[in-house]
Length: 133
Image (cartoon, rainbow, N blue to C red; front, top):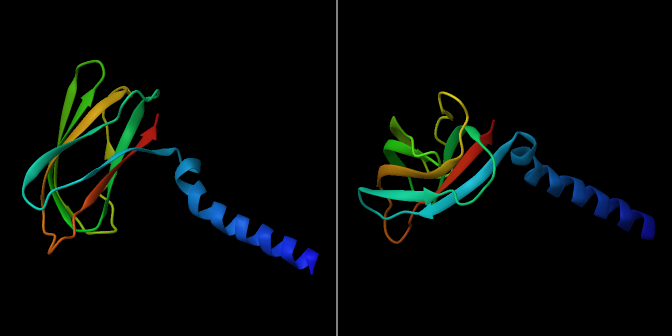
């Protein structure tokens, strides 16, 4: 009985670690998230004082669909990069991976322009992921 409990515990641990490891193993890191309004707007995700530089970003959306118009990446060195998106990301989905051209740089914040089509009280939650250089 004790041995079967140990095996069961080991299996559950292995299964649960499979859900949390892929993002870390692939080099993707959650940079921030923002609950967005139910109308056309602009919002900002501040990356904060993270160390590290990023070569790619991607948005993931929860709760309601988000129609992205454009994204502006603000780097810590003062430079900005505007990226046209013009794509709808369905709830539970992801945007395309956005390559950040040039040398990898530290990101200060990412401003995104969007519309949402949420109904009722459901709000979209936008998560920003970055891939380390």
